[in-house]
Length: 108
Length: 125
Image (cartoon, helix red, strand yellow):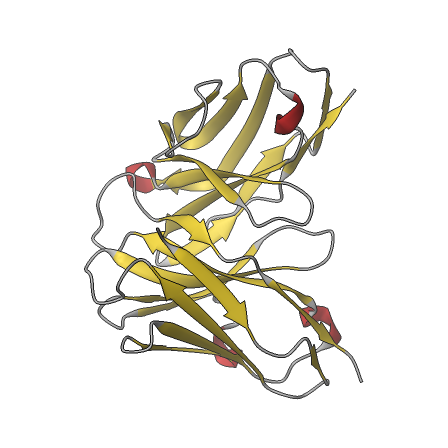
């Protein structure tokens, strides 16, 4: 089972700043089967990025994903007030889905 | 427009069996390349994937919970049912069902693009 480790656990930034979130896999993730989700309090997760780098429908272009193999990154180029939330990565491999532990992006 | 909604008990006792139903619209679970999965989230904690069923009735299980989980689908009713046996207080969580794009080994797929609102299940005597 592939374990996903997200870092940092919490990111304290101001609106307008750039956010860089990391997701590291314990084994190589095949075929870009890596996605990112945003979750706000009391809400279900929302798909942001699939295929490691493709934005989901309706997602602003300030969100971008990159990486391959075991290292993946979600970047928010300029934080808007509505971007402060928890972000999760998710992978599929060896017939199993796993989520990372999440990164909370909070207002500094 | 794809929507999903979870339903079931909000409170179960330890050792009981939990049964949750996901009722969906906007897609068919007979279409190749789709599935419905269940994911849970204990209060204040991370997401945990539990189980998934594909259009062709193939199923995937979380290794740590496989012995306790069952999933079935009723394509005529557009429903997927999760059962989890021997419930424990640590199983207290919000349970989500979600639409999966995947199952054909296509690069870039295997993601959950639509989610239900979730249902909080508390396990307590």
